[in-house]
Amino acid sequence: MIFRFEETIIRYSPVLLEEWKQGKRSFLPEGYQVLPEVINQPSYHFGEHFVWSHYLKEGWKGFVWYGIGEWEPDIKKYDEGRGEVIEIFSGRGLEEIRELRRGLESGEPDLFFYKDDGSTMFVEVKKGSDKLSETQLTCFAQIKSILGVDIKVVYLLPEGTEYKPKTIELDLDLHGGRVLSD
Image (cartoon, rainbow, N blue to C red):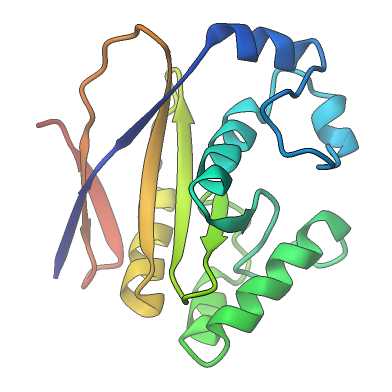
């Protein structure tokens, strides 16, 4: 079965990116604790946090730090998000996904979201010249075909930038995928 979706475009003000690099996080929810690894790498993690904040404003709950697989079990920043994944997906194919992902530490989408009504989605954030990898496409196909969860690829763009969204096609029978340039 083929699953097709188009990249979602979310735009940001370049001023926010510059403020982020200077340690100002004005778009994040009040009280959110920025982890030391984000503070120590001022040019990284802007995209994930900006998109996370965008979806929180749309009524989603979710995590920048989570894990579907069992990799890095001793790193505390994944505990809360991983616990929510286990609570939501236990008995719905989670063990099958974990078996397929055993030993892999890359490919999972950047963000995980859920709502109290049972809605769930994973979001991969791309910015600049960032491209989807075969490992990511395979993971997305596994998530969609086994867990039945929607996956969005968000392309983050500065305001005023032109960009034509790509169409992504996942072959769920093969647990792999490809990117089409429509």
